[in-house]
Image (cartoon, rainbow, N blue to C red; front, side, top):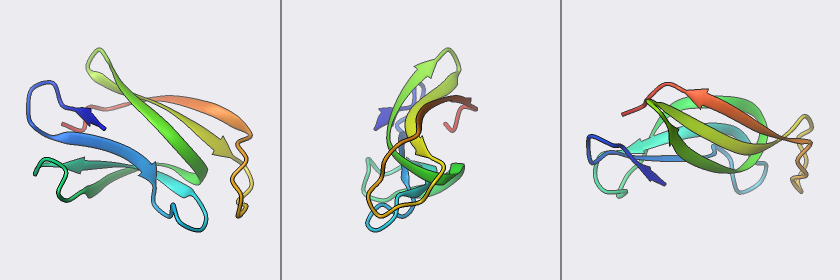
Length: 88
């Protein structure tokens, strides 16, 4: 979870379907201190897992595991890095 630099909005990245098959890595935002989360952007529709967020200037940097195959047990094929527009 990462905070916006000029507001109280929080940002979180996670797969949309984390319980059975980890897929559709999505950026979520919260404007109520994390009580509820709204889906903002699907970053990668493929199988994905843990992610890390950081600010890189005025853009959101995202590092995450990714797989070209959807399996019950997630095994990453590579680590991906993307710079995203500011969701704040």
